[in-house]
Length: 232
Image (cartoon, rainbow, N blue to C red; front, side, top):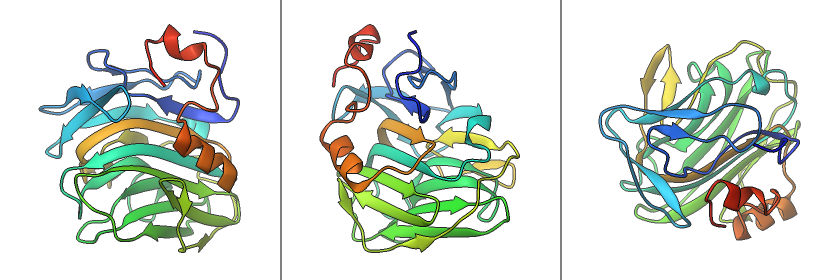
């Protein structure tokens, strides 16, 4: 693999079909492994996606020490929920509601997407995107710029804004795609499709988020896509 395609990337998982392995295109060596009873590959909005039935299926990323001690970050995900409310977690690096680094998921019992960031002092804040529907593709981007927490839906900034300063925890927690890791137990499994997930160690600007929505590989050199058999 060539050198790191994007200097600020902590991980980038395009969900290209390679058995039970998920390639990390960030260059940081954080590949994922499919876990659970019946995860499978299917067609996504662009290219392939993983189908997670919501039982016990997820992508195990292991400990992502690269997210320790950062003062800003971004999580981007292209997903499709089969159930809407309570659709489960998309990306988490946590060990409970108040412990960890970051989490993004569909809040149980409500029609909103939640993006939460934790700092090393044990303080947390979160933002929500409201009025979401099942059986619909969404591009979610959660941004923490070191001072505020924001969430975008399909490139559009949502009105809810959180406030948080500091840096993320240095302790290593289990990161995963498609579930939560709460009190040392995997739970909150995603029910639907996940096509692409990217985590950055900086907060994207509004214009960068809009560009990312229009072209999910806009921040990566074009030559990296055919090398891995990935279409834009």
